[in-house]
Image (cartoon, rainbow, N blue to C red; front, side):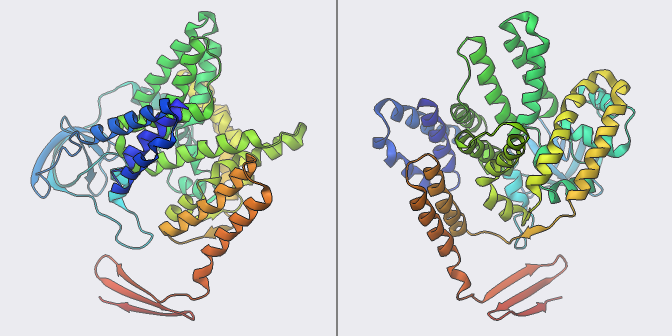
Length: 474
């Protein structure tokens, strides 16, 4: 229970960034067992103390003209003082720069369903945007390990397959172009995020390769994993996977055997939030933890038939379990759900699983492995393009009440899965939440939207009965 107390305490402390109501979680302390309550309180207190540290290095300079020098990578300028997001057209290539411009706060969502730059950057711990007015000095990045690795990955590959190999191995998706949209429309975008898949394959390969080291192979594998994190950068999903892998490797080195998935996830949550409290607002963080939580809760309780039938059902079960807790987040943020996603994951993920180890090997072999990566990549992209043409469930934004009703419907079913309530009672409770969510359809409200269309404004009035009136303000 201690890992769960630590994880939930850290989560409650991090939630104080979003709402003071999170402090009410301390009222649950008497209900924890005596030993665990202190771990919950300690994690909560540590998180709150962590939040008292200065988090905005640019306070007092917003709105001023500044000159900043640092390393630019994928649109972010890293300076000795902190990171800023760089706004310049056309986008600047990676390198070493000295830039002059105006520091601004990130823009919030300008229209319903639009991109919320402020929320995106908040989840990355970035608090300012540099609107570049002049490039004082710029030079390409000096040759380094990352550039050398990228060059070996791309050697002998066509541009499309090279972009896929780099995305699957180094996490760089900027060269994918329309391919990334096809992955989204086919329900396979999660496979492009560096996460448990990459870490599991790399860890398994290292443990087998270094078996001659005995138990020290686990520490050697952990060292390589940390180096990989430094190489590709600390994305939220990769940090979560690396923490969980580190716990498993340390336990194996100490001879403790396997680590419970839920306990490892709770430890990862506590460590991750203590190091990066702002990560709570990252969509990647939310999707990564909820997907693993869904699989950890659902998969162990499902039957596992043998043979081909078992393999097919297991593939569908993994997709279902991973998306069970994600569904409202996916619809709220991406406004569409690919209906062929379970089939696409079943048929395409095995090929992507092969591309990951081939990509790691190609980092060392260079052109020697170009032909299998090229062939497998073309087959994969062909299947992705095919599934991208499938039907989509379109959806708008979901209100907090909508989120609450969804999880109010899911929790009774999970309780029935664990035999805490009967399936009949769980179905009645879930059905009640579903019916409550549809009450708004009986009396559709009138809606008034004020839209920002760039060079002017527009007003949209939606009336019951399907009447819509659009007024363009010019």
